[in-house]
Amino acid sequence: MAISSAGIGSGLDVNAIVSQLVAIERRPITLLKTEVGQLQTQLSAFGRLQGALATLRDAASALAKPATWTAMAATSANPAGLSVTATGSAQPGRYEVAVSQLAQSQTVATRAFADASAVIGSGTLRIELGDFDAVPPVPKAGATAIDVTIAPGADSLSAIRDAINAAGAGVRASISSDASGARLVLRSAETGLENGFRVEVLADDDGNTGDTAGLSALAWDPRIATDPLTGATRPQAAANAQFTVDGLPLASTTNTLAGAIEGVSLTLRQAGTTEVVVEPDNEALKKSLDGFVSAYNAAVGMLREQTRYDPTTKQAGALQGDRGAIQLLGQLRRMFTDSSGASSVFTRLADAGLNLNTDGTIVVDTAKRDAALANREELQKLFANADAAVPANNGFAKRFQQWLDGALGSDGAIDARQQGLKDRVRAKEEQQERLEDRVLRTEARLLRQYSALDNQMGQLNALSSYVTQQMAMLNASSVVKR
Image (cartoon, rainbow, N blue to C red; front, side, top):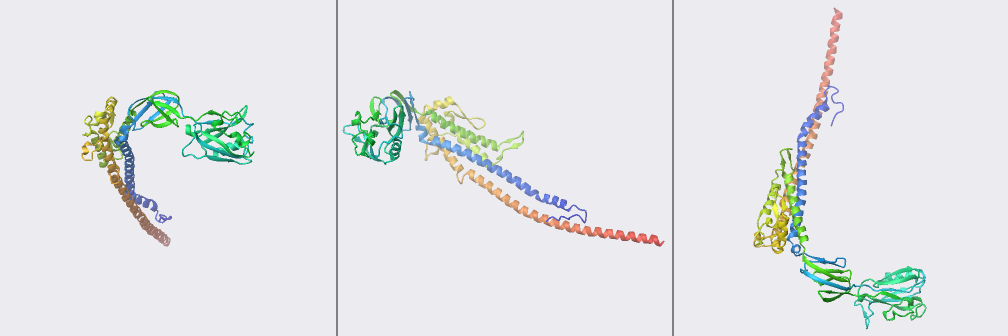
């Protein structure tokens, strides 16, 4: 503990002396902090490297998947009239799709009432889905007729609309208003003949369900569509989509369907004839290849940056001289330049247009790559072939994936190197704590010693002053006696 009065008796700057001695004692701690900072920088560099290698592993894994190589693309000659998407199960070919009728929902509009607040009447409506134009009518399979209760006081046109929408009967109700008044408009929630509907009045508060007064005004049945008493109309009848694929007649309850062309989803938008082309999706494959190249170059670039030494600036990367990082860089290069027996056409990545630059990164020969894409089956072997019995026949994507799985695993090279650095940081931090404790004890000891010295020198100074004073007095007395 510092003594505020230290140095008063002796004139020594005790605190300054002790501070300088303690600073010398703290030099090893400062060096340890510098070393810990360097280790933390290396840990951070390995963390970034781990992320870059994980990205490369993911890119290699994508190229190792069969689905990447079987991806198909479907195009429509008239996307505005017919849009298409394909899956891996689609077969290459050209197909002619002729649409004569789009699938549509049924729409029914009541006669006009004064406005949306007009009271219609209470009772019970029954809404049932099905093809009721057919003879006999065909109710929708699996659907149940829904009864909608219209209570007294909640029987205005708008309240009836809300009650129908809340019932989940497979129709949507809205109100359409114009100069003639307000109409309740009912629309099928889904398209197709099976989603047509009829509206029956099971109970009417006026006691008569056979007229057009009260709730009965909302009844709809295709068999009485021309009855002048009801006033309801059907602006649009339910219909199935009607089309042909290469002359084969087909029908669908919706305008979006799968299976008419295997592995292709069709969305019908307009009537007309459109050519659909299904072919291998080279653009998607190029994107996967470019993703691998970018990830490889990023990993190599990061390793080179972290392990380099610039003699001009005399600046070193965080991992300069790190054997683990240097080995990773060398392994990446060796894996790239190896050959594979998977394909009889392509044995090296350079055969597919992926060339190694002088700085270790990949440069793509696009003309050579595009030519290789024309032989997709052999190119797939070069990247994705798996041969557990003969590893030399594994494709390059498979090799990168397996190696990176090991390097990035819990017992892999990256994890082991990081754990080693963490252990060193922990050891140096513990050493710092021990040194800090020793410095505190040294500081306390030095303060005690110098304080004691200060006191002793103060006493000696006082004695010296007393002796000097007595000698002066003796000298003065001798002069007087003479």
